[in-house]
Image 1 (cartoon, rainbow, N blue to C red):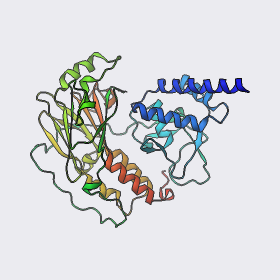
Image 2: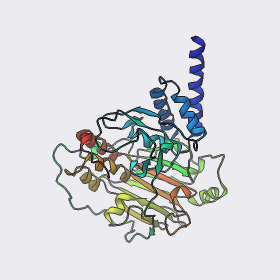
Image 3: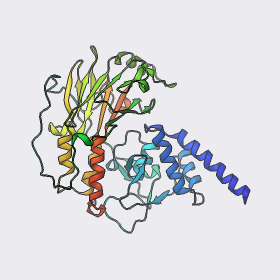
Image 4: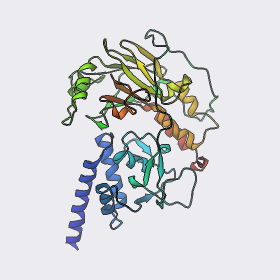
Length: 376
């Protein structure tokens, strides 16, 4: 019996190590490790399941069975401080590095326990096998446009009220702002490089210099980040980042962005900003040197969307993708470019605004999962 437990314990350590090493996504290391630990805890008491998962990851193109975990009341799992659907977490971890949400995934026909949106009380477990889901191809590829308003001296314009929120809806007031108001990840193509930067100052600078960012709370210096697999084109772009970008958190919770470079453009995608300007979600902005976009994220409008009394559980959850801003240095992406996706650009950032995520989580706790509509 002791020999059996020793072998099982050894297998778990090896499997944990291999899973982390296999990961292809851009999740930060802490989140990836916690996600793997969470899954092992759920699976370790079921004979053979961990071995099956290992085989799936080793031989992804071979037929495989469902790998399931129990389904929670709201169908999500919490890893560190993030909540998401489990199949999205593990598909992002091992297959689709730039996956945004569950709308981009469709289960394969032979999956017995696929994720299904909406209320389904008979489904007690959900399949998290990353190869039991396929990516839905984007129907509209991003296009690049020049922002019509990029005067860095222009003050943000407050938006008109969209809804009258009830007194119990989540609200934003200045003193409630989270200590860490944004988190920034840096990528080279589809690989995350370095640790996640957590911004606490009202002005955050992301530059290409080598000042260790741990010692200066408002600077994320990309020049100090090492990558043993760095490609030459990424090295070339890094030498051009220099002054980089500046993020500004305003008193009203809005976020503005400024290109500090004297010579090179940056390319920006913000779904919320696109919607406010009646553009497609996939639109990418070409921000020239020394120019700004005021209120690239508008917290007032976002709060009104969260407080929409007609919103369902699903529509609120879908607002998560509005909390991320993507920035590529020098190279754009989209339909008009040779690089169709941001993961094909050499150097780019994923900037997550944290306060709206808190508003989403608060609103979801007020709604019942049964309010989610079943997608056709």
